Length: 139
Image 1 (tube, one colour):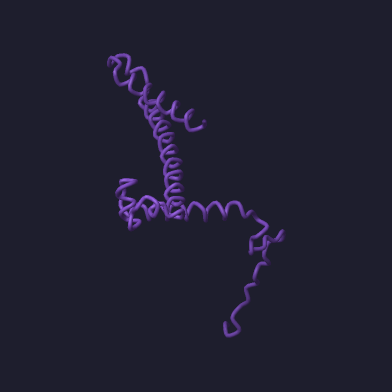
Image 2 (cartoon, rainbow, N blue to C red; image 1 turned 120 degrees about the vertical axis):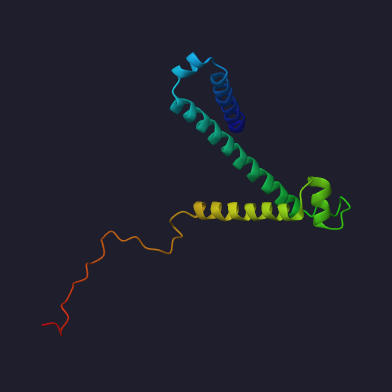
């Protein structure tokens, strides 16, 4: 549902920017260029968030299809021919998506691990300052 709401907001933002472009020069001058730029930037951010979510879903589905060996029941002799015929992507693109899924899984695992599994120790007291001694051969 969040994706739909976000997509709707993105479309509304772009529609607003389009309406601004179609205004007469005198009306367009009333809106500051910075405000228009900010609206467009917000719209682009929303669109990029949607793309990131879509790529994550696509990568997960490709991983699941690869792990389930869907190529076998579909009659494909190789993963490459399955990717080309069923998904209309190259084998290299499919493996890039598998890499994306591995990366997202690793990031999620690191974030979900929390601080309990950290091997570093945070000390409440600051490190002791080192004393500077003069070189014994100095005059």
